Amino acid sequence: MIPIRNTYYMLAYAFQVLRQQGYRDIATEEFASTAELLAEILIRGVRSQLKRGLGRSYVDVTEPLSSLRGKIEVTESLKTRSILRRQLVCSYDEFSLDTQMNQIIKATCTALLRSRISRPRKKELRRLLPFFAEVSDIELSAANWRMRFDRNNQTYRMLLNICWLIYSGLLHTNEGGETRLTEFLDEQNMCRLYEKFILEYYRQEHPEIQASAPHIAWALDDAFDDMLPTMRSDVTLRRGDTVLIIDAKYYAHATQERFGTRSLHSGNLYQIFTYVKNMEAAHSGEAHRVSGMLLYARTDDEIYPDGIYQMSGNAISVRTLDLNRPFEEIRAQLDGIVEAHFLGYL
Image (cartoon, rainbow, N blue to C red; front, side, top):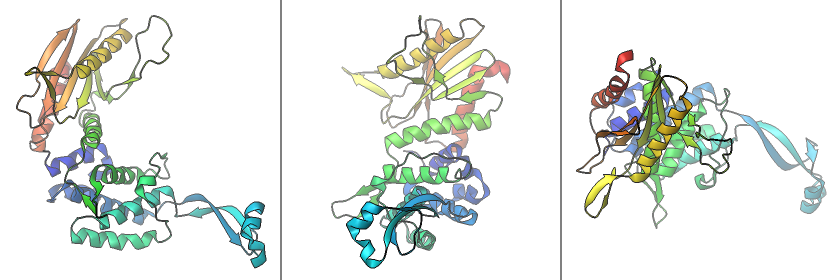
């Protein structure tokens, strides 16, 4: 069970905007559940966006009009007999607040009002909704979450991610139709957050080391790569000729049991070994040292993995990060990984 405050710290690294002035005091507040935390982040984010102004974009509008505008839809005009009312159906572009992004934010705020969060936060959400009066109501289940962000709507990135976490990880409908919020994010969303947190932590706290999540090319004898799966590391740390590939794993159970014996998940071990050997092949013409690490989030299991294996000339380590500790101890664990692998450069 991860303390809610640590969930906030993970979100703050994953979304750097949460480290700005308007969000900093969230870390000092007490929240009864992760749902309350995400609701508060959304409220503050929407407030901030309102100060900048809600985003607008051109949307397609088709409606009967008494005066011509845009393109006349002849078929629709005949079908609806709008000409009898001295109107024609026209389609045109309008610079509007009724964008997909604003629709998702409004729908998420509305869903939170039907949930079991505190009354003060519901009151804050009701204060925000009038600003979305021109925005259409949609069902979150029908929303298209694949959106492109540019410099004009970049401030929406964090807001839409928070909306997605609320929708996909927290909202459930009971038989009576009431929406309730569970206390914790589901495993899939926590896995993504865990990966993003580790990557962004090293990017921000250790600028002396290059942290990225690159694709790893297959070491092929020829150029034929049809149907080969894409290899992309969760985190790759690089300094000079030293490379550490980290595969972040967030599971309810970090090990598997067979015939009374616990062992590592075989697929995880095969995956990190494949990453390391293909990365090593890419550096075969130069001095280098490539290592791999499976970094599990610690669970309530009594047995958790911790060890270093020497495999075909490469070190493959297995570590466990205890997210249930005070954040300063989590920081020390992550810093210790850097010290152990890049000590000669620090």
